[in-house]
Image (cartoon, rainbow over all chains, first blue to last red; front, side, top):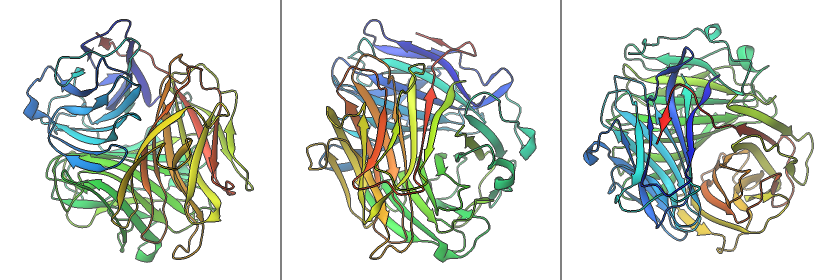
Length: 161
Length: 187
Length: 179
């Protein structure tokens, strides 16, 4: 089995953040390589969503490059480290892979696709500048002010490698 | 600390009887290497898998682009590539034919780690030319590179895919770089 | 079995569409991959009906055309509401080889009781400079569960086109906790 469901949550009340902890590097003897996180839902207001690994809250440790389309124009920037996409008050989704999350010899590269049909869509490459294996991840509003709405789902998977 | 993985033999990782997405082979480099090969693919996998996926996570190396050669075919005229990219300051697109290394410009390397996911649908069909789709990225903003890309390539041959060779226009892949091949079933 | 094939369809002759009906409601998400082409010349549209309908849709796209151009559109841009991307057609003009568009679509929570998001990435390919690498954010503004998906092109779906539908089931393992 190479695609493994690790954990999930459907919010029964609004939440300011969601944290997955105790992420293993193997399950049932199968070594794990990549994480896949799927977020589907809404936020209390339109927000950028940030990710933090292993309680590392130093923003500069998460450089990123983004390309987006807003329905009429395109753009690309590096202006918002930690950001993996956005959520709005209308339904949207973020699907990302954290590649080689269990490695201890390289920084971690994250690839994200984010999709909001009412605002923007695009793709992000983000790097966690740390060689430690990822054991936890937390997502929240970048501004740390808004909440993920009731019914928003977060599902974490791992891929063997 | 996980046990470092070397090159797993093709027969050393038996696909699970359950599930439709299987790890077939993984290579993690223990030294610099110019290319990574997946071979005998039709013989090993065509009877079980409909689609292939390659996932790569690369240690830092010099700025360059990934190339992909099919079946040892060095005829540049048999390949074409197209790129949609975000550079960190603009979004643009371009197209290119390729050379003896095969399908070029599939993934850009910065001087930091980079990663990508490459899909080949119906690689074993003998009635279709082969289309490649790849989503990749790194965090080195580069106006001439492509930190965040959706790229594509065409291999103009209806032969079943027997071998895939991943290299770059120049230089080597460095220690710790990982290349994993996955199969997706259709039944 | 986190990821399981539901059905694979490959066309032996040209058809009006590829349809997955009676999609089981036992998974969490759906992944649809398709290798597809239109019978007419030039670039055509890749279209998707959900539960037999092309309506109640919002979408937003980002694409490149291979010749330096990029763009972003919505469902108000003039293309049909059920547009997913552009797709290869028959050879003609500078395009002298037959190629199939490669696309993947992801539908989280397809059986839930809220509007349905989906994400689409697709690439046409050919031996000429013009092509379309396309990403789309989609929304089906219905609370019903998705029970069928119909993949179409502007005219007729060419022989050799294929589509594979997978179900993905969320779960728990490895001692991961979530809060």
